[in-house]
Image 1 (tube, rainbow, N blue to C red):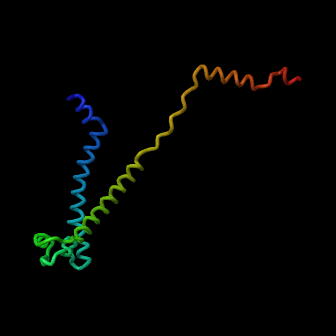
Image 2 (cartoon, rainbow, N blue to C red; image 1 turned 180 degrees about the horizontal axis):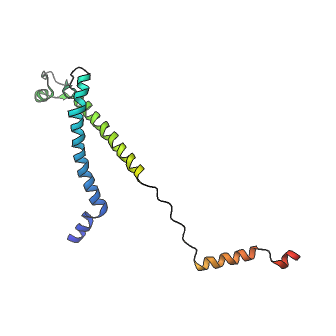
Image 3 (cartoon, rainbow, N blue to C red; image 1 turned 90 degrees about the vertical axis):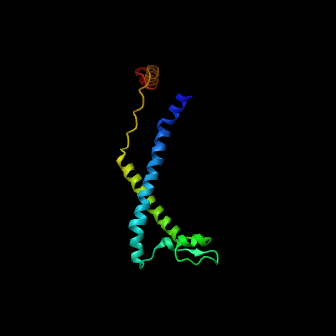
Amino acid sequence: MWNEFKSFAFKGNAFDLAIGVIMGGAFGKIVDSVVNDLIMPIVGAITGGVDFSNYFAGLSPNVTAPTLAAARDQGAVFAYGNFITVLVNFLILAFILFQLVKVSNRMKKAEPPAPPPAPSATEALLTEIRDALVKPTAAAKKK
């Protein structure tokens, strides 16, 4: 049973997928930081200091807090600003992954197709016989 598990867990596809998921999680954190720490402050500065993460609408009359964290403590909120931040995060991540795939495809060289296999001895002999039957013989030309 242990050998079966080892062959499954360390088989190329399963192992590569596990590495990809771990790298994707780490890359997601980098993109989160880029969006939250670099891009959204610039967008906020352009829009007059607006912080999208605190845009929300209270779904209950009890929600009167000015910040999203405090409003969530008071009741249900519709946090559309947080959604905008996550959407920008997704678009940046999708664009970066698109560029990586594009570069990867460019770096892969198209392999030339493999040459067809040489005909077997039987096929070569049959080809010679066919060609001999198709060619008109000298006797046939005189008639």
